[in-house]
Amino acid sequence: MLVSVLVIGIPFGIVARQAGLAPLEIVAMSLFVFAGASQFAMVQLFRDGAGVPLVVATALLINLRHLLMAAALRPSFGGLSATRRAAAAFVLTDEAFAMAVGWFRRGRTELGYYLTFAVALYVVWNIATVIGLAVGPAIGDPRRFGVDFAITATFIAIVVLGVRRRSDVAVALAAALMASALAAAGASVVAVVAAGVLAPLVALATRDEGGA
Amino acid sequence: MIWPAVAGSAAVTYLVRVVAFEVALPARVPRSVARYVDALPAAIIAALVGPTILVHGRSVTAGPELVAAAAVIAIVAWRRNLLAGVLAGVAVVALLRLVLSS
Image (cartoon, rainbow over all chains, first blue to last red; front, side, top):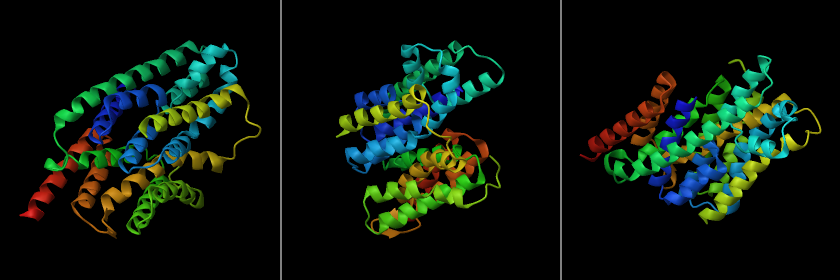
């Protein structure tokens, strides 16, 4: 899992740098936001010239799932001190959650393991970001050899890697097509994000034949 | 514009992570809501990336980017490897642009 964080973190640094963000801004995103999917979305929004409220609202929507994860972990974390609980929340990610659920299901109760693992993910994510942003400019100027497409390709890959059920494919296609139609009609970035917010309703309308 | 956006995003992201650790949710979350929230990240990223592939100016058109996008999807779905997909996508775009411009 640490390797997979490295494999996503380096492209994040590269993409953010190619998109024209300053190294310090990129480092700050990984240090303080520390949420892969939302950081990628933020980079694209900055490229599109989106305003602060839209960027913040998008980060909120993308990370809303952590609320449900924390709720599921709450019974196991009740015994922690306030400071440790605050730290445990800060490093809560999809990976740390998956690890914790597996850990508690096996009857374990110690939380040190979760904290160590979650903090390790945090450290690796930030190292990967720095490697990526250092490598970024060396790749060459965009447009030449199709390097500009690397950003788009990275986003596509992130979406494809996130597909777990068949309905996820339908949701992604619905979002991409709706957003494209809106963008072609001259709609703003707000409308494009709105397409992404509406698309998951497709998943609710379909029976999950792919299995959960 | 970037610093306030980063600060705001960091604040809301921490908020959604910490709030359910501190207070119990008032009710059980319905499965449909959990499913919706779970699908949001990929949907929003797909929405942001869709127009960069399909929209050129004011029209939805198929270009080298669409072919390359299909290549990326196929390779990442098959190999589960981000780097392989990105390299293939860049190669396809570069090749098609070269062919189409000559």
